[in-house]
Length: 224
Length: 246
Image 1 (spheres, rainbow over the protein chains, first blue to last red):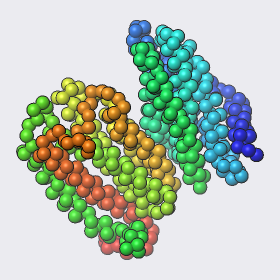
Image 2 (cartoon, each protein chain N blue to C red):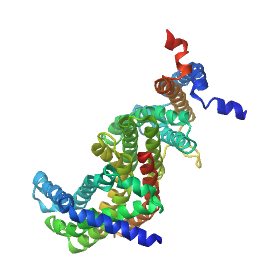
Image 3 (cartoon, one colour):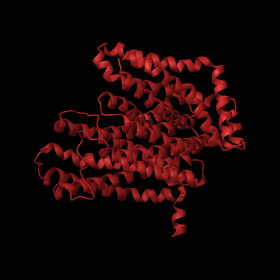
Image 4 (cartoon, rainbow over the protein chains, first blue to last red):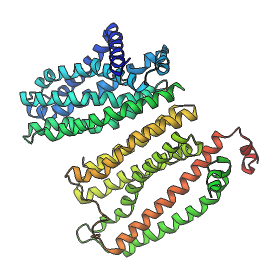
């Protein structure tokens, strides 16, 4: 089996599992929508203010939504022993991990990207800013899945893992948040989002290379 | 020499050695601390722009340096522990984390006290302050992860991976001064340019930094001794220790 067919097999399998448990997937999405909708209620309906906080609010909500979905990444497979079989499989575990992260992003990251413009409209963002928001989330949410996978692997089977994973991954999410929300803000203020988006893409490239590696090491420790 | 190095990589031999070293480092810490504070509070001239309030620099700068440096040292020991499977290295990493977190907190606290008279606000969302805060979170995450895992070997290894991942953050802290232009003044001491501050001020700051170094070493050694006793409590050499028997 070549690397690509292994990757697509894992992605297909995880997507199938996710499809069988639709409610979990939708919960993440609705969480995102609800959190974003709470902010105008808490802050007040002034459009000028909302327009200003929109990038940050959407991005923070995306961070939290991704974080909530992280325990789905390995926990179920760990509980029923699938993960151990994967570690024993004659293909690199890193490849399988990458496949699982890709599937995680398709299930919980991509829906956020797609629904974000709709929520952005509630905050009266201009069409251009909405496009930048989508691009920044498109680059950023895979980054969140990749980094989150490290945290999920480290806290696998640990007591209090759910809260712990937030303590571990949220600080690591901060650069993504800064550049992601910064891109939209820079576009709104007329500075151009290219710089922020480039940095975000650079972080993504970096994480795509290193994160599966770190995740694999963490999984091996958890499975010892 | 080689044999000697490896010998002290074993908790059994390192335990008494650390016990002997602690008083010396503690004494040096007091010595440097007293002279640094004396220089800082009585000898160094009042700053032309910042008045007396600047004197907190003597604590603030040293604490910030240590908070970043200890993270690197911690990650170094953690990675040694991870790659060579040496027990003592991982224990050293766990022993350093609380001290590093303390310095990160101290740095933020003194920074706030300094910021109030200088900028008129306790806190600004500036890159350096923010990254120091992230560093504190990273320390807390490391400590929390190790505390949550009961089995020491797994705790060591998981912590090591987290520390190595977090190490990516430390250069970001350092270079953030250049990346973002904000309220925070540029680095106070630079190696490439002649320092813009008075000689006595620089000397006082270095003394305080040395004090923090010595303090960190003494405290980390004391803590690693406690960790060694806890983890090796069932082994022969611990039961034969005088302080354990009595």
